Image 1 (cartoon, rainbow, N blue to C red):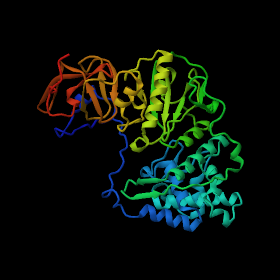
Image 2: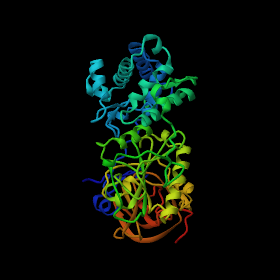
Image 3: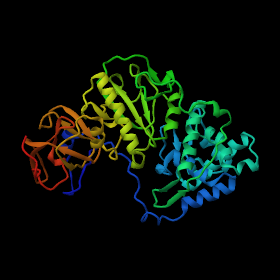
Image 4: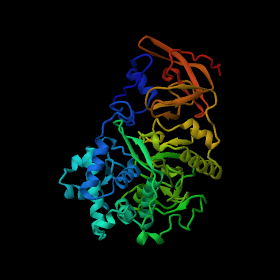
Length: 457
């Protein structure tokens, strides 16, 4: 394993000896590709693909965009799969329960590889699957012209696990139509849907409550939708001491559906929706969800709708709702409200995930939780997998880590173990109150070895 860490302000690589002592294994969080040009000048590739697919398969264009936006915010994520093994803007899925990717290949003649990686092919595949689902339901040409008539096909596109998850999914798509969309693709292209009044014909889903009468007994504001019993263990082998923050790498409804799939082999206690902060509990607090490997026995897992590399999912409504849940859990189980006990998935020992990633605003989140906000002076950091130590030395215990470049608040600084590298010598360490530990000033992205304006501890 090689630890390559770039020092932006000094333009040097940290040597292996220092990296081995100061960092954990690098876990590269995927960053969104830079737009090809200024926003609004990214061409018409995506808009053209939606228009052509809508015409070819007689699917309302705005509905097609709404499905894609609800699934991925129109980000194909470079052909990488979601948690449910779904691909592209339209989230074409290939797993034991759902095979929309394979169905799209059969319907369109496109290769599976192109459907996974090429956005126009992926949009065409999504339109073909939606039309096939409409045909399965017996929709006629006149009905296909009415966006409201597509509700049942949309519900089937999103899930096969339960009517409740299907309604949750379809309602989210129709909420996008009602609110409208003005967004930019990763290539800088603007895509729009004007707000519109649509009366969805829910059919069999009309009697499925969007907000079921069963509420969580652990956290009353949450809905209770149980995960498959194949995806978690009853009881716990350890006391609850930590809360783990995750990002779903998929949609809210898709995640609820996935945790209900007995083949998933994963779960979390709670899932939080991006648009309005709605919370669904899927595993009881006193049972062991499978979300963080070594951290499973002693932690509660909270999934947040979205993707690590796209900050547009991390809304204020989500932050506030999740923080209220975290504060409740911390108070109920006596978990300290600090960054040593409220951690990201990437910070749990033995994990290879990067979530919640550098776009997650930990300072704001901890402020909302009402715990240690980090007080002091903010400074940028650099490097990935950087350990925060219990004392000002590389040999002391790790009390947390920084998965990637971020901002930290420094309360004070001390002289400790000297770190030497390539002509630089620095014995200064910053105390980070949010973590209750020390970070070598080598990882503070400023030119000064001793931070200006920061007192001695």
